[in-house]
Image 1 (cartoon, rainbow, N blue to C red):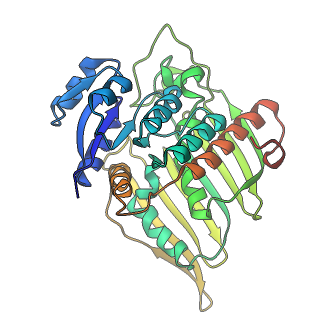
Image 2: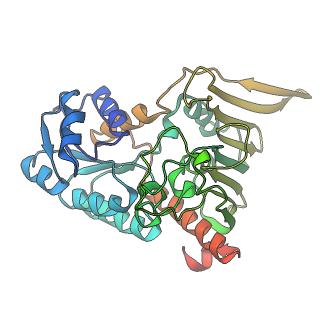
Length: 366
């Protein structure tokens, strides 16, 4: 089997995880493109990457034998770059969120179908050891039907800079709802990715201009740009299957600490996958847990599942799965069809928050 050749568009912080995952699966990263070619060079030189370009078109022209492209750019550029790569016959691995909205995601899905190439997204939390452990119980029928779930990514102080692309709706598509879709995706995956029916949501803008709520990551502040996205959003989705899902996403919200979790209630077992972030993000005070809750022989039973800690939160494993998928070694861990459902829910959250009314997703197809 020949070594797969991959290239990366965007030399941001996530590029390191992509490189490590691709390399772990036996692929070679041969080139990287970034509008700031000096940044691309600085990233690549320490990782054995020898070719640097300003954009995707130039890079593919110079390397027509590429098997796949990884897209790590501000959200606004996901759709055009993904479609360009697919149309040029490349498999594509794209950072989250899939796109700015569901309409863009539909176009990406159609391009994937037309090209016959794999389109996969960095829904990395599915590849966390804790999520994989829980999913085995779900897949094997031990949990039963999951009737309801709660998906949360709550930051007490986690705004990723002020005035940069994260907080500029035209570039990002929104705030924490679209920036932190991981627990929404994980809950939907546990539930079987059911078809949504109705949604009710609210958005809050408290603290979005308060620099006391800035997080320890993200990008530098920009005095000449805008901050026009939400600080937090809460919502509830019901599905045609009768299932329901509560969603809570925030960059800035009064809470004890940053909490990332999916809790679910099944007909045979309940469960929870959770990470409490530390004081300084991923530090020695971080706590991961993976539990199932059951009733056995008249007793309440809590099953604590011990897994190996993964500081990358599945990012390396997910990227490695993409390489395995394009080689036919393993099925892709996520699909563009699922990404479309995710984006439809995100669109509906914003629509409901703006209108202050429930949204019928069946009627609007939003």
